[in-house]
Structures are given as C-alpha cells and as structure tokens.
Image (tube, rainbow, N blue to C red; front, side, top):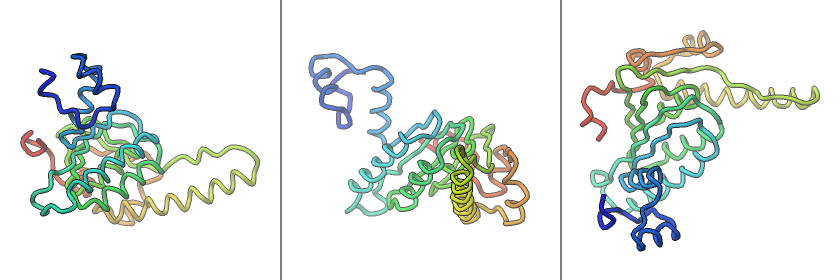
Length: 211
C-alpha cells in the first residue's frame, strides 16, 4: 500500500509524523486503523476493559452520522472470536450497541463463548459462519476473603446474573424453561442451533453478506 493511499484519520500524532517521514506504522496497527476507517472492529481476544475503550468508537461513529438519513449510515461491523471474559465490560459495550442509531452488525468467526456470545446477541443483525460455535453458561463470582465479603459478592453476582438472564431472554428465542435447564452448565451451540434459538439471525453462505 502506498503511503498516499493510507487513511490517516485514526492515527495518533506520533504515528502521523512517522507517515510524513515515509515510515509506515507496525503492520498490526496499520491493519487496525484501516479497519476502523471502514467501521470494522475485530475482537480476537479475551473480553476485558479494552472493550470499554473501544465503545467510544460507537459514540464517535454515531456522532458522525447524527444528521444523516438512516439509509445513508454506514453499518458498524463487529467481528468476534473470543473465549469470553469480563461481564461488566461486555454489558457496557452492549449498552452502546443497543443505543446506537447507526446499524451494528455482529459477526461470530470461529467462536463466541460466554461474554463473546452475549456480544453476538446484541447486534442489530447477527451473523455466524457454518462452523462457528457458541457457549452460554453462568459466570464466576471470583469471590475470596472473609465470609461477609464472599456473601456480598454472591449477592451481587446473583443480581448480575438476573440482569444477564433478562438480556438473553429478550434478545433470543430461548424460553425461561430452556434457560433454567441449561444456564448452569456449559451450553455449547453449533451454528444451526444458534439460529434455532435466536442467538444469531443468519448463517453466512456468501461473503457479500458481511462485506
């Protein structure tokens, strides 16, 4: 790629200076910034507080689209390949997706496990590949310390799990009976099952669907 063809809108000041000297940023950064310029986020890692930082992009893109007609807004595409991770971080990101007036597509790649599966459910349009796998299960308290603190942590975790339950039931076809039966175990899902219970909407058969 020629330097003149590179979109520098998302670069930090020091990296712009490097470009003006004819020095390209690291390939991973180059790929990252190019994706952002196309409104694409590829989450290929455990979900942690870095996802909260990334939620600012949802705000930014909505700001850019504020005065545009709905049909003129370029969809935001979130590609997911994750074992899961921090529940509070993913729920914050889900809040941003739900509030986004710009369409958000979630696309599960190889795996969308635990919090990654919750993220998949949030999209305005939700895609999986034919061999994508998903996992739904209850979370971990991470509790330690004296009895009082453990009990406080357990009470908080139960309230958090109730919020997650409401979210899952509202964003899938999973019935309360199905949820109660399965959520305390590792509930593994293949692509077809994701469609059947409404975790996703479409199995990708043509890349044009997500390009």
